[in-house]
Image (cartoon, rainbow, N blue to C red; front, side, top):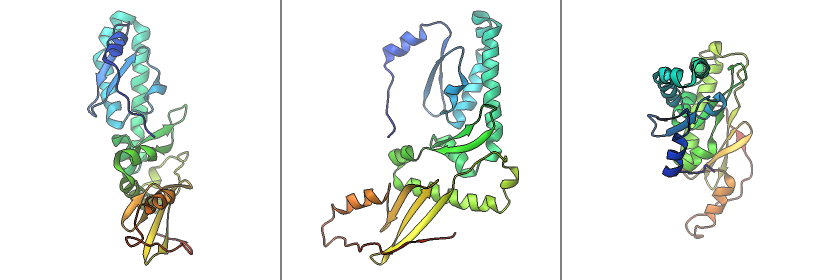
Length: 230
């Protein structure tokens, strides 16, 4: 479950009173407080457009850093900017839905120590928390659709050999004259749909079903399931 935090203004002022500290307000509405030298490992959770904004902000403070910290401070800024630029070069290797998720803060690309793109990490719990199960189902549908399309040669030719993409599957079965749907990503259930409603998993649906009166809904036991090929 994502944790909602709001920094204490007094703590922020105290932090900014220290040497070589900075604050940048991102176009996403988030505020980033940091001190130099800046460790690039702290940037992995930033959204796509936050990285663009941070790279530009670092350019704007280069002269000030040169005066205050000398050449080693400028070298740290240059290293961070170069790393961000390398990450952004991999945009063309991501699916469109992955780029959308990165921009929305619903997932991030994963890079190795050489800044090579190796996978994409989805924040399914965060999507559930912010947007609900229907948003998870829509992401999963687009992801499955675009992975199948890329496997037919449209995007796979540009995809690095070391990039590992997790498997998305859709299973469906008949229950009470309707269909139930279950999305799995990398063998983990991320969404369950039935009667036009979406839930985090089947267990959440069963808990919800207990709240219905008997005359409102009766669901027969599931007798089987079959994987659907799209």
